[in-house]
Image (cartoon, helix red, strand yellow):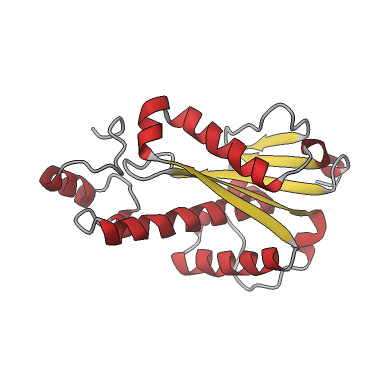
Length: 200
């Protein structure tokens, strides 16, 4: 990792959450810190891909990272693109829009950072130091942090939608196409939160 970060003082992790649901937004998290940030982490919960952590573990990490952000030890942003836009332009362009938005919020000079991205994600060309890592959210700590902040932020929003639209149970399935979710759609129809192009 050291040789990859010699051109930049900061490393950035990027991950998306919510590519597959039939309702709600897609979210992209960007997490930035100095390389040595991970040498002094004081939390007893393992740092992993958010999907492999329990809800309680994710929220514990999120609160820890929020405190570290307040102390100035790191920064992060989560950008979301809603269902209407996803239906309009497609999921790939929606993720690209959210990714670029999150990066702009945490990075002042693209040349001063090294960006690590999960899966098939790519940063804009001005980020000359970047690497896409398959299963990066499990293999690279800075991507794991991006995964956690994106997942907790999106899940929190979906719980809020669950209160506003209790007939769909968004707080339980967070927009994914479960049997109960499809039964609710059959009974109540699609809402403004649903991705119409995703519903079978």
